[in-house]
Length: 128
Image (cartoon, rainbow, N blue to C red; front, side):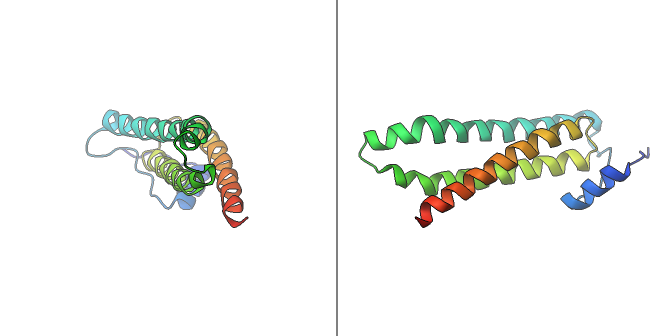
């Protein structure tokens, strides 16, 4: 089975450094479930980062006597891991030519933009 790959898909595949392959040995259903699981994991990780960054760390650490500035390295690591997770889920969607890959790209780019802004802000806090 061969699938037509649009120019936009080819360009994204090159940017993500993947080769689009619409069907794996495990079948389309298995591959799509894997991609959806990767998406779910990425979004859960980003959600956990938000809960840690805005709810737990600012209130929990000062309550136990740890300075709020100690959270910055933790948040940097979490931000980088979230960005890596989003990148690999994008790669997976383009590798299998997932039907909703362009919709997810919008969500992923929004999340990556916010994470990059948070990372720059955190680095600036460390430098100050």
